[in-house]
Each structure stands twice: as structure tokens, then as C-alpha cells.
Length: 81
Image (cartoon, rainbow, N blue to C red; front, side, top):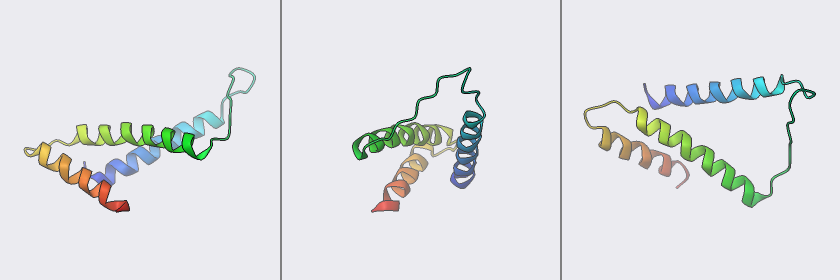
């Protein structure tokens, strides 16, 4: 599975979960929404990204798995740099 496919898969899962949450009956479930300040947002986003990246790195099936993991990590870091 290429990193592009994995990204699309993750996006689809996130969208599916979001849609399912929107359909929940407010009378049957307590769903609380709150605004996040900038510090909280970065913490929650980094936790989400950490788990998603960990999953992606573990999904690499290759003879040179460690090399591919390092390459992917460097690409992720290089996006913002």
C-alpha cells in the first residue's frame, strides 16, 4: 500500500466516523462540544497525528522496512520544513 493510498484510507475512515457521529441521537448519547484554545488544539492534533503516523509506519511491508520508515518520516518532516 502506497503512502498516498494510506492517506486516502485514513481520510475516508475519519470522514466515516465524523458522519456516524453526526447521526447519533442526541437523546441517547451525551456528546459535548467545546472550543479549544491554541495550546489544546495542537496537543490533540499531535496525538491524532502520532497514532496515524505510527499506524502508517507499522503498515510498511518491505525487505528494507526500517529504511522505508525513515524515508517516510523524513518526507513528513520535510513537508513543513
